[in-house]
Amino acid sequence: MNKYEKLTWIYRSVLRIFPAPFRQEFADEMAALFQEQLNAASTHGRLPLLRFFLRELCGLLVSGIRQQVYARRARPLLAAQPGGGVMALVAGHAIPWRKLIFGLACLLPLLPLVIYLAGLSAMRTSENRRVVNQVALADFDGDGRLDALIILNRRERDDPPDRLLLNEGDGRFAASDLWPATGYAQAAAVGDLTGNGRMDVAIAYTFGGLARVLNDDSGTLVPFGVAPQNAGYSSRGVALGDLDGDGRLDAFVSGCCPGGQVWFNRGDGLLTSSQQRLGPARSQAAALADLNGDGYLDVFVVHGNNWPYIVWWNGGHGRFHDGGQAAGQSGDFAITDNSQTLGTAGGFAVALGDVNGDGFPDAIVGREGADEIWLNDGLGHFTMVHRFGNGFTRAIFLADLDGDGNLDILAEGNTSIRVWLNDGMGQFQRGQHIRYGRDEAIAVGDVTGDGIVDIFFAGVASHQVWRGVGDGRFVTHLE
Image 1 (cartoon, rainbow, N blue to C red):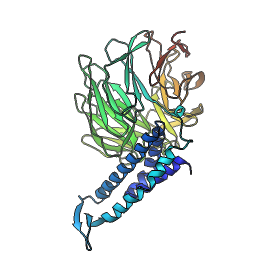
Image 2 (cartoon, one colour):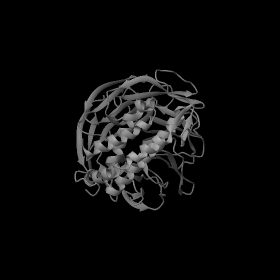
Image 3 (spheres, rainbow, N blue to C red):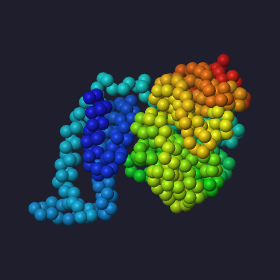
C-alpha cells in the first residue's frame, strides 16, 4: 500500500460515519475525488498537504453527522441518559456522544503519520503538477478581439491569482487589472448572463458553489458570490446554455457528489440552484447541445474512471419523461435520463459537434487511452464508430482547423496536443503534434484576427500564441 492509498484508506475509514445507503452509493466516488485533490495538494508542499488532509477529515466528520441526522428526517435533540452524559435523539434513535468523542480521539494518533507521509521523498514532484486549470477566450473589453481568462489551480491564499490578459491586436496580450479576486476557482464558462451584450463569467469553485463575474455597461467586471449548493460538493467544470427556454443562459455544473447540477438564470445574471442531481456518480465533464431535435439543449456527461457516459434529455417547460433513472425536478423544468449508458468508463472530456456532415451533433470523448467518436442518429441515440490516439486527454476542442468547412479535433493531453483532420465523413487523419509544459493549458480561437483558428497556451506566469496557418498546421507567433 503506497502513501496515497494509506491516506485514502484513512479517508474511507472516516466515511463509515455516514449512513450505509449513502456509503454504498457515493463512497467510491468521494474517495476517488479525495485522492485527486490529495495529489494536487501534495504539489504545494508539506504544510498545505497537512492542512488539506485535516480539513477534509474534519469536514467529513461534520457532513457525516449531518447525513445521520438527515437520514432520520428529524432535528437532533439533546437528552440525558441513565448513568450520566448526554446523547442526541434522532427520530427515536440515539447517537451516544461518548462514542462520537471516542471516534474523534482515535484520529489524533494519525497526525504524526500524516506529517511523516507528507515528507516522503516519493511525493509527487512539482513537474507533475497541473497549475493552470483552464483558459477561456472571449471579448471582455468590447474591442472585437478575443481576450484570455486564465484559471489557476489555487489551493492556498499565497498561490498566484487567476488573471485576465487583454488582446492588443495581432495576438499580442497585456496583463489587465480588470479581473477581480475570485477565490479558488476550478473552472469557468463565458457568456452574456445579463443580456447587456457583454461577456460575463460563471465560475465553478473547487469546494462547491457557483459564482458569477458580471460585465457592466462600463466594462467593469464585478464579482457576485453564490452559496454552495450542498456541503461536500466539489466542482469539476461548468457549461452555459439556455436550458429552460426563457432566452437566458443557465449553467450545468459537473462534479461530485453526486452527479451534475443545474442552475437557472432568473434574470440580471442571478443563478439559482434547481436542486437537481443528475447521475449516480461523479461527473467529470459535460457538453450541451440539442441531441434529439426537439429544440431543447440536452447534456452529454462523462464520469472519469468510475462510470459510463450518460445522455440526459431535456424535457423542456415542465414536461417530464421517465426514461429510466429519476433525475428529480424543480419548479417548471426537469432533465430526464433516456436510459443511455454509453461506453465502459474512462471519459475525462467531451465535445459535441457534427463531424460526419449529417446535421446532427456527435460526441468526441477524451479518455485515458484511445479517444472515441460517437455518432448521433438524430434522435439522440449514439453509436461508437471509431477510436483514435493513445494517452490521457484532458480536453477536446472542435473547430475547422484547415478551412474545408469540416470540424477537426484538437486533443489536449498532459504535455502535448494532437491535431486530427476531418475528411468530412467523420474519418480523421493524424495531424500536427505540439508539446508544451505540464503546468500549462490551452484554448482555441482566432486571437490574431486573420480569420484562422489559433492556439493559445497559458502557464502560471507566461503565455504563447501558436498561429494557425490555415491548412491544419500551427507555427509559433514569431515565425
